[in-house]
Every structure is written in C-alpha cells, then in structure tokens.
Length: 567
Image (tube, rainbow, N blue to C red; front, side, top):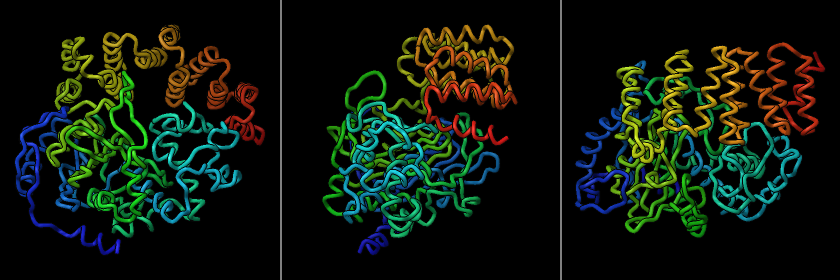
C-alpha cells in the first residue's frame, strides 16, 4: 500500500492553483496581499527570479523541487555543476545534502519504533553491550558515563548534551543529557551505531531498504557511489570558485547523504502525508518536543524541534523544516503542515543560504521562513557582506578596502556575519599565499572587531609565517587577555603551521599552548606530534608521556608511543 501510494505521488501533475504572496518582504513575517496564481505562472516567476538571485549571491548551481497539496508539482535546475567545465545542473545532478541527512535517518529510526525494536525513551546502551559499542565507537571507551543515559528521543531532539562534533576525543558533554536543545551531529552518529546493532545491517543498507528503495530514490546514498563521478555537482566557495571535495566512503547519519532534489522531494511527500509511519509515531514527529533558543545574543525561543525536524510556528503558518550546511554545499526544505505546500533545494556554493528565505517565499508563499529567525546569521543576497565578496571578486582587494570605509555601527549591528566575511576572505588569501593582502583584511577585521579573538589568532599566525615570532606570541597573549578559553583555536593554529612545514613555528605555538593550559593532555599530545613530525623522537616521546600523566587513556598519545616503540 505504501509503495502504491508513492508511485502515485511521483507522477506528473497538471497545473493547479495555489496561494502565494504578491508582495514579498525579505526577512519579515508580516502578512502580504494574497492572490491565486497558476502553477505555470509560479514556474515562470521562479525561472525569472532564481538566476538573478544566484548571480547576486555568487551561487553557481541549484536544483529545487516544489510540493503542492502534498504532491510533487515541479522540479527545476539552474546554473552549472562546475564553473570550470560549465556543465549545467540537471534533474539527476547529485549534491551533498549535508544535515538534510538527519530527517531521512530520523524517519528510518522511527520505523524501528513502529516495529517495537526501539523505545524512544529507553537508554541506548540497553540495545548494545559495552564491548560492541567500544569496538565500533571508540569515543565511548573511558568516556564520561553520562552517555549511558542518552535516549533516541534526546538524539532526535538535539538534547544529548554533546557538542555538535567531538572529533577524535572521547565523548564529552556541554550540559547534562535532556537538559536543553543544542544541535549535535555527534548524537546522530552515536544513535547510528545502536541502529546498526539492532538491525544487523550497515547504516546505508538499512536506510536503502527502509527509505530509498520504497520511495524509488535511485540516486541517493550515504556513501559515495561510482555513478556519482558523472552526476556530482562540484563545490564552490564564497566567491563562486571551485573547491576540492573528498568522498564519503563511510556513512555519517547526520551529514553524508548524497541525493538529488528529484529524489529528496519524494521523501518529503511521504513525510508530509504521514506515509510509512504509524499514526501516533507521525504525530510525535511533528509535535514540539523542545524549545529552540536564538543562537546568538539572547535565549528567547525562536522555534521548536520535533523528532528529527524543526518546527516553526507563527501567527500565519506552521511549518516543518531543516537546513543543511557542509560548507561549500547548502540545502534546505520547508513545508506548511496544513496546506502541504513546500520546497526543497540544493546549492553547490557556500553562499547558498543567502537566498533561502527569498526562495521559500517565491516558491511556497510561506511568510517568514525558519531560516529568517534569530537562530541563524547567514548573510542575505542583498547584504553588505555579499557586496564585499562581489567587490573583491570583481575588482580585487582595493575595492574591498574601499567598501569597508562605509562600515559603521549600524552595519556592524545589522550584518552579524561581517566578522566571518573578514575571516573567509582573509583565510582564502592566506591559503593562496597572498600574505600582504591577507594581512590587510585581518587588520581591517581587527579595527572593526577589536575583541574578536579569532582575528587575533590569524594575525598571530601571519606573524609566525613571516618570521616575526615575538609579535606572534604577543598577539596570542592579547587574544588570551580577551578570552582565556582559546586552547582549541591556538591548537588549530599550531596544526596550520605544521601542515605548512613550519615546524619550528608550530612547536613555538604548541609550547605556548602547553604553558597557557598546563592541565591539558591534548596540548602536550599536539606538541609531541609536532616534534615527531620534525623528526625529534626524543622530545616527541617526552611530551606524549606527559599527556598520559594527565590522561592515561588519551588515545592518540597511546597509539603514537606504540608506534615509537616499534621503530
């Protein structure tokens, strides 16, 4: 029955009438005058406005699909897959879905709830023994034991207490599990291990059987497929330039989905029509489970979270939504719960979310999308930040510097992304070896945001690169005077220097970090790695052992010492 419904849902539909806003107010949830227009007129509007928006935001390619009355109404493709080849985006062009991976995974998890193979409120360790968990998820070995209280509901509502991603360390917490909302991809990876243990299947195989095959999502996978070589859209940076991309060979529940708009809309049609889940389970999925506060500046509630999807409520509309951000790939969907009108799109450029709110308004009539709330700070297509990027792309650093003369308190307050724009351009120039121009950008950033420690750390890095070691140390000290919790930022600087073969400078930075954070095993471990990379095995061993006196279970220090003993 489910499969028959889906086959009907993905057939082509005749034009229908829908309600959209005739006056569009970007970034506002105000009501506009409404009128009915045909699907043909809607498509004409989309085809007219989308290329202009993409051009304004330096987005090379985009693919979208429209849902009306719970049915697939139209798929559209714009721009190019790759700015270097000029190959156009087509309906079967594959994008990284980024965090749009999460709702698909959540849906699959809820099918296990329906089969009574998983209880949303039972601790996940009930479903997997400690040895098996440690084998497939070594981050749990010797970790903070609060992980043993985490449930599937906590994962799907982002209330595990994990950071977004933990990296190579052990499981750690920023608050007690269940206490509040804090977005975490790590929680989804933790749940994925449990799901694989329950089903006895690899994650991609499980989701393929549960979601992809029934929905006929033929170009979707959580791992790279050979056929993607000819279908994949290249990634592009904030200037619309092609960037290198690695391929996911291991499934990551919260981030590694490859898909097309044509495929993903089939999933959304099933989701919005409550197909494939029991009635009570579906009701829970779309029931507010936890408040989502503004991410920057205050703690007021901006929306809610259900089981794997965001829920946005205003006086005018109720929607379910999710966004994706894998750096140079962006994605988004939003659907009205009542009218079942919605849109999904995928973009192959870092500035993809500069046009998200506008696209949602044009395609669905949803007034004030979730991405326009205070949870996000993406620059919009007509913002000062995007103008900065375009100025640099069109006329170089001088145009960029000229435009920054107009920066004032009003712009700084309004353009919350501005400091990140400085970081983006500064690091871009630094990576190209344009030290003088990069320094200029970061100096402008320091002038505009004197309390921004990340800018100071970058300036310190430039000092080390150019042999001004004393200046680099003094700049790091200035940064620590502003914020005493910069261990991670300084450590990252050390690794950037190490990767640039600046061994002595990297060692200086890691030594500074050890002196600043003497109780950190990670600092000593990093210093040991720098010595080992330089070829100084004696000092490498000394510092690896120092790391283990602080944390006897520190995994990278243990493995490094084993390698040294075997040499």
